[in-house]
Amino acid sequence: MEQISIATFQRIIKKAGAERVSDDAAIELRDIIENLADELAIEIIKVARHAGRKTIKSEDIDLITK
Amino acid sequence: MEQISIATFQRIIKKAGAERVSDDAAIELRDIIENLADELAIEIIKVARHAGRKTIKSEDIDLITK
Image 1: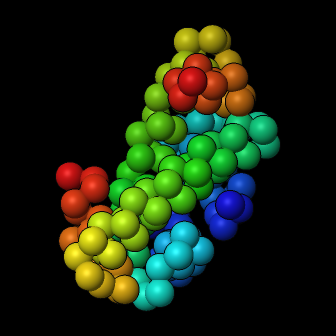
Image 2: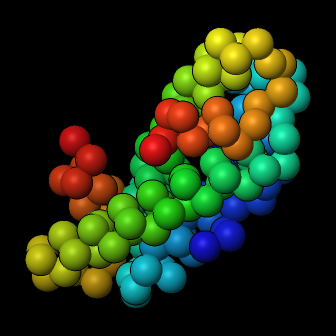
């Protein structure tokens, strides 16, 4: 958790067209996105192990996201 | 796009338990997560506008993610 800054999410939301973004909103989006990334990472590692590898490759990500 | 560094995703995947992560894999996860954040941001802005606000608040994020 908290690998990505709140400022990054302020930027992402403003780039999408928002005039102002509350700190609470940026924090909440950061938490949602980071949780999702953490959950995806766990699944990605499972499929790499299933393939007998210790190195995560893009094909592992393809398998769970496509 | 490309608001979040590849190193961040290397860290997220390693924290989840991976020994090694290929650059391609980190780039692919970055792209997937950033696209998702961009798409969520667009929806969040729509619901804020619908509520007559120019400021994005956490309740806008709640509405589309809960």
